[in-house]
Image (cartoon, rainbow, N blue to C red):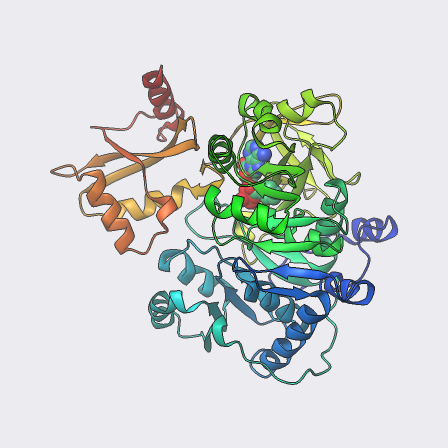
Amino acid sequence: MLDGCVPWPEDLAERYRAEGYWTGEPLDQLLRNGVERHPDRVALVSGDGRRWTYAELDAWTARVAAGLSTLLSPRERVVVQLPNVPEFVVLLFALLRVGALPVLALPAHREAEIVPLCELSEAVAYFITEDYRELSRVVTKAVPGLRHVIAVEDLPTADPVELPEPDPGDVALFLLSGGTTGTPKLIPRTHNDYLYNARASAEVSGFDESTVYLVVLPASHNFALASPGLLGAFAAGGTVVLAPDPSPDTAFALIEREKVTVTAAVPPVVLLWMDAAEFADEDLSSLELLQVGGAKLSAEPAGRVREALGCGLQQVFGMAEGLLNFTRLDDPEELIVTTQGRPLAPADEVRVLENGELLTRGPYTLRGYYRAEEHNARSFTEDGFYRSGDVVRQLPTGHLIVEGRVKDQINRGGEKIPAEELENHLLAHPAVHDAAVVGMADPVMGERTCAFLVVRGEAPKLREIAAFLRERGVAEYKLPDRIEVLDAFPLTKVGKVSKTELARRLAGEAE
Ligand code: OOB
């Protein structure tokens, strides 16, 4: 495996191969299979209605791979920050063929996220759309190692060339961790593990050749990418439709136009869709299944999905680090509505500690973050279990109910905010003496962000804090929804800021 990554120990690797989890194929194989089996079926549809068959997508990918192969070498890292455009799909497959390793940033990220990512990965290229030109100028100024900034409106192409096959045991791409610390964490996903991730997810979600999957979440997020997401849809021989945004207007129009059968969304989007469907004129009858995850969907709205949208529900409790839990399509309604599913693979090992903390290890769960030795020592047990930071209860059926978390992170409608990272940004404000960021319950978002501050002199207004953070290049979704100024923070017995007490104050106020 690439330097800076932690490989699986040989005995487990042997088991995962012997039991068929790791097939020894490159991730790109799922596109190649599609081309062989059904070249003329539609593989990809853009929001504006352009479409590509499997053969056309493959041919386009081959030309881009050839074009990129003169600029990039195998194992070099590149940061990819793209909205849901067809070029994202082509670029991803092309990079896999070249062997360059994409680091998948989110479209919402800004300078404060992209610069550290480039530095940590020593990225040599940054792929954007023209809309991101200005951001890219700031990034290139800060990161001298970036050799290329490439807008996908003019991806380099050339006549197809033979390219060496990657080692399937090695890294295929890097996903971003939701994070809990002040610096980003990169998750290496191998060809073997991610191919299993996509194929097995597709199977458990009932994907087949008639599947029309609508990508509404950012395509670079693990849920929309491979759980089962667009890669799962390709693996099953289905069609992928790209939505530029998750609004009901956009999504419903695409569901009707393309006769979408399945899509995946975070809870706030599901709530919005259920409200909008009441008054919508679009025909949503093609929709068979709505997958919901990223944050907990409560039982009450979960129980209304079938009636409101006329489709089945599948809860997905996943993480970019690996482990995926799905309710099964034939589970009793009660389990589908009240649980977040059970592990995907028979080889997924789940350990629930006394406090409910979920630990896991398995054929598609990382063994260590990239270049993060110190952090890895804390995030994994001696025997390689990943400490998810989630607090769960496991039913005798194996289904998990997510009850909370022990990690210092805010889950704002599925978007993850590492508390320490935001606190560090707040501490840079001249009027902020101390900062503690806590989630507050919210009926739509699940949680919103409250920043408790101890200040010097006059307390800054929320508006000023937001402007200050934007100026620093912090992504919009990380900005606090509220600030509360205190004279001093409540402390734990060992003298640390008691976030439990801060959260209790917010909860008390809500009652
Ligand atoms: C998905 O991945 P990430 O990496 O953005 O976030 C993972 C974390 C989990 O550790 C958990 O805290 C939370 O998001 N989470 C859920 C959940 N799904 C994710 N919490 C409660 N209920 C759920 N259904 O969010 C992700 C990756 C692949 C598939 C689905 C979600």
